[in-house]
Length: 189
Image (tube, rainbow, N blue to C red):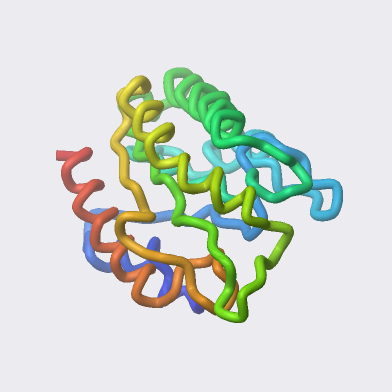
């Protein structure tokens, strides 16, 4: 979807003046895994540059984990959560050692992985991926609480587009934008 339809842009519009939302999204990005077929997708490797480019930061939103579930990585939900924990600890270290010491953190557990409308899985996902994806919300929620972060479960707000069974559709982008806007307002007071 174009920029205007995506949830970060919708959230920025809803938050209004006084807020600036910088989107660091990349299809195929993982928490900590190197994709041998698509270089540059490892989130923790990109984190330092992304964080320092966006400073000062009042709030960081992290929504990663879906791509970690591709069959090439064979990661369980527990392993994906461990990868996210490693990334979040590094992000919190970056915050503490920066002008953004007081920045807040919002963790968003991704939407479920499903078969596309034609009955197949796309992009290297499988029934195993879907099964593990359903476990992420509980694990991410516990991790967010442990780290003092806000939490949203995107799978409670939206389902994947039947076109591919992975990405949000327009309604999902709108629903996530509304929930994320409320969460940002709460976290920032």
